[in-house]
Image (cartoon, rainbow, N blue to C red; front, top):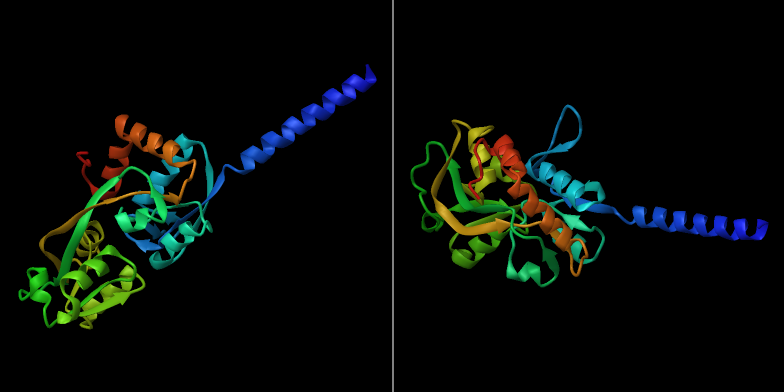
Length: 252
């Protein structure tokens, strides 16, 4: 009997150890951009990252069944970090593109976006991309807006990529560039907050885009993440988060 108890106890300990190990594997490394308002930004009072994406990933994690450690890095390094497996998941207003999808996996789209122009409030000379010929325009390193400018303007304009969105906005207000071309929600948010009365959004929405959560190629978490997003949209949680940060329901 004593021998049987010992064997049973050993089996129980092993089972507990395996369960603990499995639980440890459910803590994922998530990375975001530290300055893509209102999707992700640092709360100066708490020192914590807050924003639309931060609320989305917290809800997704709870529903999909994983815990996570959050890290920040410049946007330009995010896709390579996921591609190499240095992080498990990225959420940073990342546009789904065929080129990126070759090296990482995307969740289903969770936000509809596009690209917009921002100019100084008193500037009426720029109303479209075509008006940037011979002028200087700021955008963000590694972004689809930079790729779009290169493809459509090439050397016709002075295209300056900045590491952070705040850098390009300050360049615009300081007169270093004539315009900023970047993701519509971020441009719009800036024009209504720090840029109010000093900058304005002009022109149409360019290149309708969709944001997705980025995962390591072949990740087992793609399906659970998609199921979590679908359930959030179904029960109204997504619209609640959207309204919190953008002031109106998503309409999706």
